[in-house]
Length: 524
Image (cartoon, rainbow, N blue to C red; front, side, top):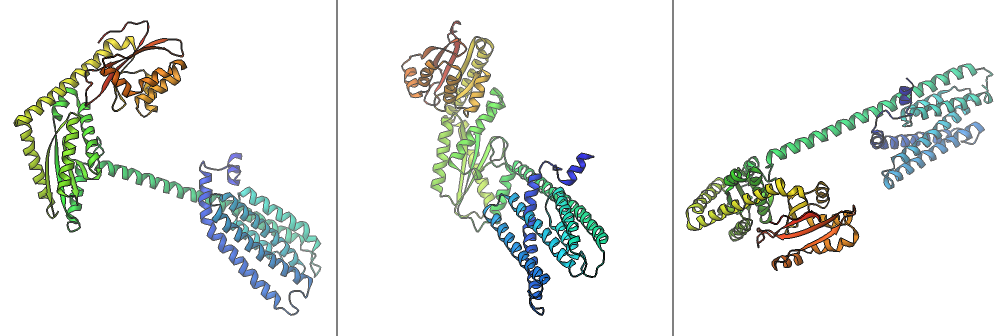
């Protein structure tokens, strides 16, 4: 019960995102408060002019002078707070709390002004009209917390009724009881209205924020689903659906397209790799090839339309440029150990895109038949088979390390000196974390290992190991880098770096073996 009352009075926020709601409300009330201040200034200007036009002018009677001064003071106060709040919004946009403090000070002054005018009214036998409409305006306009507004209204009530006996009715009537009850009713009603409006405004704005947030989440989810529906999950290239939409866009904008080139690509040997090495090896092959495509073509122009089929559509590209890039892709792919069958079709006009694609596909099929039937194709086929055999052998070696050798070693790594990457054989969990921390760069992870886990005097040995040019020269000279070091836990370890049989111009791979010094190496 007490907790609900504190929430109603604004002592504690009713929801966790209170600051966000108040910040959003600030944007809503700025314009409203500006108009409110302008209306006050205009109304009080009318009252100043009215009182100045009375016989004798504004200074004819003390009571009239008081009215005149009070009107002018309210005009100046309203103009001052309008300027201040405008400056806050322009210079301190993020400080919405300062804005509300400035408005609260003005409303507090306005409440005191209402009490002063009401007291001056008593000298003419008037009632509590000004006090009543002032507290009503405060209840509607206030963005103070309910307990703050209640304290303000209570202070006005006490001040008014405490000073009313000093301003007796000119006719000698005793209106003290009526004034007390009327002012009490107005004060309680204003406090209730202020609390209800404040909480309802907060709840409405919070609901608005929640709805907007949910709408953004739905939009993001829809966008993600739409992207997934148009993207290949493996390569992140456009899929067949995006390919069809692109063709439709081409058909719609035939006149706006100049030249059109189409490269139809089939990856040779994917089926064999999937059968011998598993689909993970096939997926890695497709990722590697797609990365090569993106080195020479915009990713938006590349589509994976089938398991091993890709299409590249290029607008406004010269035939010579297209042929040159296609040849570069073919060369880079063969260097990586894979082979493509390609078909290229180029037109000066894109008026018949379907025909362009069909002819490129037929050219690819002719190239594929030549790949497997010609003498050169047979050579490439043998190279492909040799490549797969080598991968299978390496996989078997990895299995052998895991099942036999790894338990006696601290760590076993295949490290590529060209890419600074590691092929996992046996890697301790702590080094796995270091690799992640270093973006899978082996040299950085090795130096991090030396810094965290190796005694400082051995750090230079690891720095020499990260000098891959020097390491290459040692391995080419048939020298085997080999040294011992001590970890911070007191253990002595030995590191040996071997030239792996995969070590050639295409992939400079090395074998790094970490072992306890007490354990004899098993020679490979």
